Length: 558
Image (cartoon, rainbow, N blue to C red; front, side, top):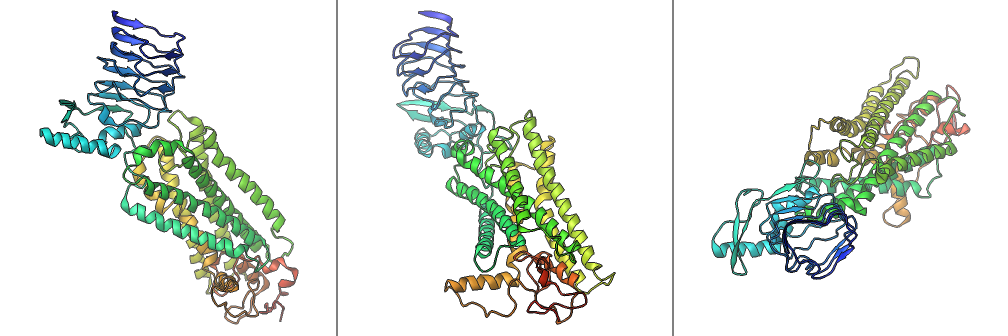
């Protein structure tokens, strides 16, 4: 039968068995039907110019030879279906292919099977990368076509550097022209045709950051959880901070490992990675770790400020029970924020680095979520800076305006803590807010520099500034290794990790001692009590000397 157009839209046909359609027509429409499968040779003997199978929402299976025996096909529309794979046999002469809004089709077949294609409308931008870099998508077919090109002496297949060139190849004794293809959606700033780590230097740097963050935070957790001293409020808070920062290291480890696994061919794996479980887990871990780290830093800073400003009041301390309740709230908040993109508020699948993003410009809930994250972290930075300023003022005026020579050193070390927080959050917040407002100032490729060098800065710096750089932590680590016979433990002095050495042999007021016991490790002159590993001596009623008496090394009073 010969017709100009055959419209069979909206029918109840569920399958097309072999040899079920034999027709000659310019256009055959089976759109918006109930098709679920099409068998081999279903269109055998037909000559159809345009075949419309779009809108068959339950169409999952196309047999490998479904289009075998179909001639004259120039346009095929498979949009809005549930296809898991796209057969290519019988589509060699197709010129226009439409597979839009079909997220189930994650793997696109080799572009070398479409010898005459001129235009493709697909679902994922990464699928269009195959037309720009065919040698990467299918190296074996590329070699065959290159060999065929040399045999007939006519050019190369079009690539990113030869956009308008074409290739003549011998295939079954005839020459086939492969043209440049117009493909949509084109790769964009969020989905470029590049590896996860776009630069070789970043690929090296990210592993340095991974090792630094994981080793530092694991060391802190191992030493703090060891049985060498009892659980205290600062120790408990530092355990939470180390765990949160360890999550950031794990996230970077996942990203770096995937980059190594897909180096040079990432766009072949992009859809499976970004839409799969791995990227969702990585995104959850990084948001959870980042929010828990920020919450814990604020809690630590508030606890130290409160202890310093109430140093002579022994009952005004954050006890371990209160700290546990505060951190339960922090864990619940962090888990809640990290879960939102998993339930449709934002998405972890927008980019290869699995950071939360709005799905598109109309995703108001996703945009609000991102603004909440960025502005919340900015407010936390301002709060931490304000508390450190108040702590420094307390130190400077602890003796009625008497300025001590050590004040400048304390101020510089406090400034280092504030600077690491600022360097971590400020670039992310600035470029994130501008992108949300529709004025992106940096591409995803360049944003990976922020991902490696700024985003995990706190995760790398915190274990060292708050713990590892203290003399007491190193001594405790050596003792722990000594108990495992891994090294010779240092001699145990009268001063334990829970006691403070006298500074320069001088006397201190009780408030002065309590103030320094709550400063960050990076802000206390050695030797002094590590504020991260130990709670203030003032939390023990017997640990503070009466006014006018300096504390003795053994914890008594002179």
